[in-house]
Length: 114
Image (cartoon, rainbow, N blue to C red):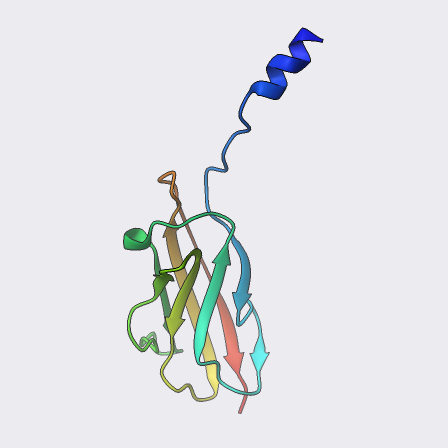
């Protein structure tokens, strides 16, 4: 019984990295209308100065209307406002640092149909 009490009193380990829980538009999405922004919700708090989000077109030109950023009142949410998009394939690149200092990065694509 004494061992159970000791184990129960130990703090659970904190996750070492931030991972996406939800993306809008989602990875591989085929959209009939262009999205006004890209949003990625993470499972951990993000360090705003070290977290980035960018979206490029098929020619590798940025389609962001400003810098991707962590939302001030929700430090789990990374957002990039977009310029008006035409039909085509778009590539999302994200890189975040969680509050514990670990970096995670990834990318995905979505398509706007004509």
